[in-house]
Image 1 (tube, rainbow, N blue to C red):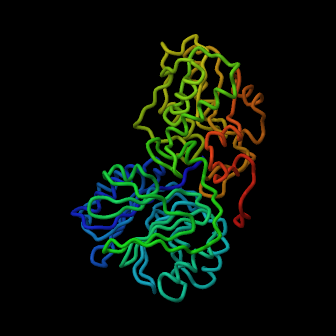
Image 2: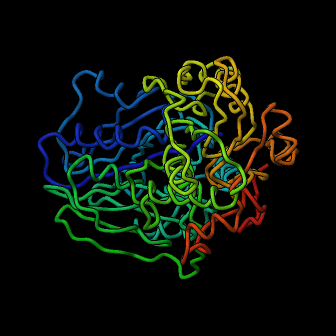
Image 3: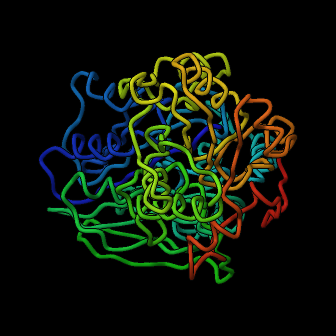
Length: 452
């Protein structure tokens, strides 16, 4: 599974806005490790810096512009476009609407159709990301800037949370379905718009709320805040995988704390499987830890550290090839022999996509003499591909699309595989469970997918 991106924008009076933006990207690093970029507006002069790899690589750029009235930043993993620096963001252009920088999190389902239309009209593309296509489409629209932006938003379809700045203001834009999170807050000296609340927290800021679905949030240089709705057709389809895997545990996503939500997923897993009584509960760190805590407390089975993670290694799905992902598991995780030897364990993980990472983890545990393994997943079986910003493989490569849980257990050579049910997940999400997208579990897509 490939993850999407993280975006951040700051406006205000700061001595070093470059470093403040860097800190927000550092907080959002879990959302993408392929490239990072920052664009600044200082007295209507734009400065854009990009580097492959981690956000920390931005600190190696010599003689960067540090001051500015506003700036935006981006960390990327490609869900649309190849993995190269030409597709790194933010995207900058001097257009007929003035100077604009744009950073995008999501995936457009009509990207290819619009790109082909623009190429036929003479547009020249440097890369092949949907973010660059949005910029081109915006530049081709007539009228003032807000009219052109609104026209663009009425045309693009899919998942998008965007931070954008022109010469006058900072903008945060969220699609009518709210697939991707986008929040805003107050920081000392100004305001921030970003993907997760953890990026507000790293600047000791105050969370003010979400950019609501189908809205443009505009903050000008004087600190005036305005919400501009661009559609009345709102159908909430928040991405449930933010809670299951993507977001940081300390973030508040769609009004819910991520750690507490994952904890309740673990509790529900235990309630749905009362007859399995292992000796210990072991989490696949780090994203499985919160669910493991809930499972252990509900089942009254002790939680122990049977797997240790090397935190100097990134998230395994970030790596582009299956061979790299396979090797990175052994670099990232090591069993604790004294904890697991001879013990029957409940192994708690966030999800299972192809099953190859699970195979590697189980192989590591068996080498250290573990007893019976009962594998628990804190989400339902992933049977369908996602087209809204999570680059899951073709459904034929999804293990739960091809095999029943019992057959997956046979493939993994373990005692059992147990997924959280969709109804169980909805019980965890409680009152607003119907505001989430479950298409990767049930195949009920909210819109037609126009790309190949």
